[in-house]
Length: 535
Figure 1 (cartoon, rainbow, N blue to C red):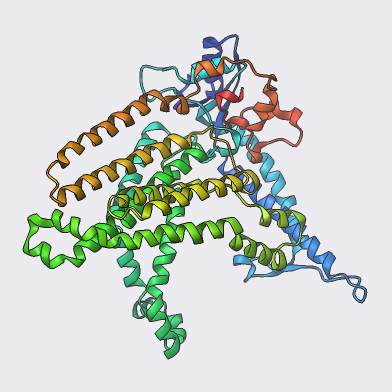
Figure 2 (cartoon, rainbow, N blue to C red):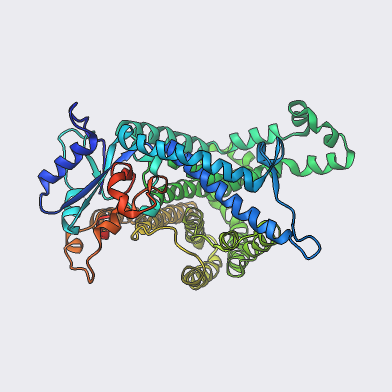
């Protein structure tokens, strides 16, 4: 269970003492142990440096072993430069340099671990119970009259904890969320502003002014012709490619504590972006642009004009779904791009078994981009089914084949990074209902534009969909957000080892070499979480 916004303890108590005494008094028979969240930024930075030097040593040893031949048994010791990306700075022997750095950093890490345990406790903690039912009950209880104290939720599993977001206070989280939503809204609605800005900045004249060292390239006639033709488009493609990463970063800035919640948040933002700009923006924008003179001459007839012009866009979206079906799934099933990247890495970059294994790792399914794109296809197929019914077979084929391919990839290819206990489904279900309502509104608009006078009988469809969405939200969604006591009270086949669960949440930078030393690091293990069903 994750506890945030812990009240400030009395002067004679630490935050850990306060959390321990509070939950031990409430649950004397089922309380196991509490971990207080600490600020581990500095310790984690040192730890990552040490791990980076260890990887460099392993890589350098493999390169050194390869350099030993019959003619040169002594081989060539690897070297690198200490400056930016190893391109500038003093040239040093890699093995000696990294070994000295590790010896220098290890005492610093130990000192930082000790100071983290005693001086960097934050107002958040993870609380463990011996009983799953007690954990589920405690996580769903209002613990304080003031909403900004003892904020309690079920904690995610260890693999998906976002440590840096755990100590953030409730007002900080709410402010961040508001600012991020505003930024996303502006990005979605005024999408052309950043695109126009990018296009303006990426003109050759602007680049020549801002980056004088590019004059040698820009002044070449042949290169100038090519760059003038393709530079803005390349900038646009790069922007769109970076958009999912940008949305993930914005979602992380909200203060979300788990990776699965972060992916769901980014997925929702990406869905709104592509539906608004790809579907609604293209469909309505191109229709109005092609009939701009008619709209100017007769503004009240805009809906009639849209009804007459929208079917003309059906070819574009039919082709769009067909390409997603043939090209998208072909690349997904063959995994041609990852295969090429793997062989390039293996040939030129990978020297150790760990590096080959990391290059070959397929990763997870990528819900933050896959789900929004599939939801876009749902929206397009539903809406254009009333305009161009020929799109329906392509939509059926897309999801029928997609079910088979995605099932194969999930079972045999992708490796999940974490387990969120099905919490992605309510997110998807909500957007399917939203697509259904957009389809119903489109259908009513098209039929009304065709002057079918009984189209008013279709208006209750929107109300029925809203009622259905509300029913699902109140009846089924809560069981995905919180563990029901009915489930938590069921007996497990095997009793989990509480010590194993507890140590699973120790941050790597604070984890002792010997697990029997865990009690010494009890305060440092504060950055852990656990989901109630895990108990």
